[in-house]
Amino acid sequence: MIRGLAMPRGRRRPPDGFRLLTGLVALAAPISLVLIVVLLAQQGAPAIWHYGLGFLTSRAWNPVSLDFGALAFIFGTLATSLIALALALPVGVGVALFLAEPSAGRLRGAIGIGVELLAAIPSVVYGLWAFYVMAPFVLIHVEQPIVARFGSVGILSGPARETSLFTASLVLSVMILPTLAAVSRDVIRAVPGGLRESSVALGATWWETTWGVILPAARQGIFGATVLALGRALGETIAVTMVIGNRPEIPTSLFAPAYTLASVIANEFTEATGQLYSSALIELGLVLMLVTLTVNVLAQLLVRSTTREARA
Amino acid sequence: MAYGGLGVAESKPADYPARRVAPVVLKALEGASPTKLAVASLSFYYGRFRALKDISLDIPEKRVTALIGPSGCGKTTLLRVFNRMYDLVPKARAEGSVRLDGMEVTETTRLLELRQKVGMVFQRPSPFPLSIYDNVAFAPRLLGWGRSRVAEAVETAIKDAALWDEVNDRLKDPAASLSGGQQQRLSIARCLAVKPEVILMDEPCSALDPVATLKIEDLIDRLARQYTIVIVTHNMQQAARVADFTAFMLMDTEERYGQLIEFAPTTDLFNKPTDPRTEGYITGRFG
Ligand SMILES: Nc1ncnc2c1ncn2[C@@H]1O[C@H](COP(=O)(O)OP(=O)(O)OP(=O)(O)O)[C@@H](O)[C@H]1O
Ligand SMILES: [Mg+2]
Image 1 (tube, each protein chain N blue to C red):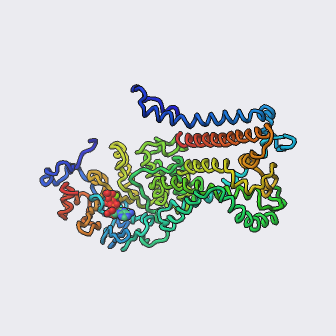
Image 2 (cartoon, rainbow over the protein chains, first blue to last red):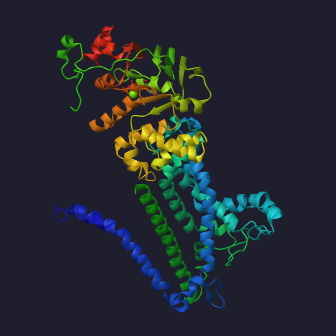
Image 3 (cartoon, rainbow over the protein chains, first blue to last red):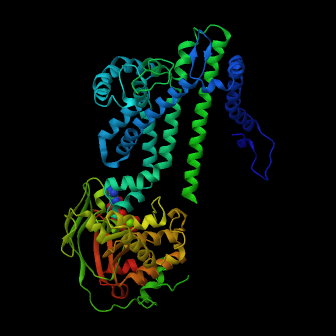
């Protein structure tokens, strides 16, 4: 970002007003990021000193005995987000493929608008819908049948509940679907038409062209969409809080309640009494940032390694 | 220029009437040849727009046939009828008949078989985002060939496309790493891999520099006796250099449909055109 301030080489001009202004605006983003981290660290300092690195690996969360650890929440955050992604990615890419199809006509327009509107629904509304409509439905038509049939498998064991890791993942997957579908659609549309034509000219069917040519060509962009969606899922708070069951444990079953970093902060910070309790919650905020950052960096590295492979 | 001109450079039309006989030696025809693609009263529509009207011609087997004519006269449209590429265009339809040996092209439902028999090379090289090897193996795999048969086909095709010496040590590299001219030869290899009978080429050299163009033309020359080649070109020298037969097409001035004006051995078409419109075009008076 700071590179944007550099002059083109060999033509050094003194910074004019415009450059200065845009430079300062551009700097605002990294500076506020640093400030946020510093302030959080300052506020969370008591907990950071008191629990040390053990905070990250402890699954305790007991405000009475002041025994705090982040592991259950880290697990809940990663598990809900990844399950949501696994559910939403195939659907999102499928929708994107349909929307990118030139021959789909009017239906395509309607569905496209519908998908984009999904992104405009506030998350608290998603939460309400998930709690009153989706969760009861899923309990009866998905969770209970699965438990009845596969209950003996650990992660599918009962009892099925309305609010659970699974329900939270499901609502998250609906929430990230528009991002996945819209970005993937644009990426797929940007695949040069010559690729599709060449593939068809070799005798490939629509499916063979899609699998063998279009998706490989769009792979990187779809990956970008995935990272974007994952970012949203990791930080999503209110809708998840309403349906995850809010139990600070690492669940052994998909259908057991769990808790995420964002949810526990939102739920408990108003009632946190005592310095250690509230600074532990603030430290969870830092951990959430760390998790999001790590996921993003890993994703970037992955993208870079695949592009290098493609260019080598 | 690297190669002798036919003397029809558009820039000096004044020369023409006096020099109707081209100064280069045109390709001599080696005897008659049976018909490979029989086009009969073909009309083509994009929705309600009629792009081709009543085209009939017999494209001879194992010869190079060039389609020439001004922009928009329907050369690409005609070419894309031959392998049913127009299926990709909503509301496009063909009327009339195109027979490939016994197969009615406009009606067949055996598209894989048709497209295996009729390969196509496009104007812009469009390597798939796969390795060089996988690009050429694409069509053989669609046909369900086994590994060793695919490997053999890939090697033969790359050799036949005069690309082997340049890529044999890096078949696993991405195809995008090749130069434009190499990519175009890769496109040719890609369609040679399934041993087509007909190869359609739509301005295959227009995105290439003169040296790469020359290589493609040499390649066409070498393939010419094994395959039936139909090539669209804007370059009349190229038509004269590579084609045994040439078809001249023109757009109707009022209704804007494309029609076939003249189809003849290339030598005849360039030296003694029977239609004044053909003569006008090849001598650069319009188009
Ligand atoms: N997909 C399409 N939909 C509607 N009309 C089309 C389509 N493709 C081509 N046309 C029209 O059909 C006519 C013939 O086009 P075509 O591309 O076959 O010309 P061409 O001879 O190949 O021209 P060029 O030399 O510029 O490539 C033109 O009037 C064009 O506008
Ligand atoms: Mg064309």
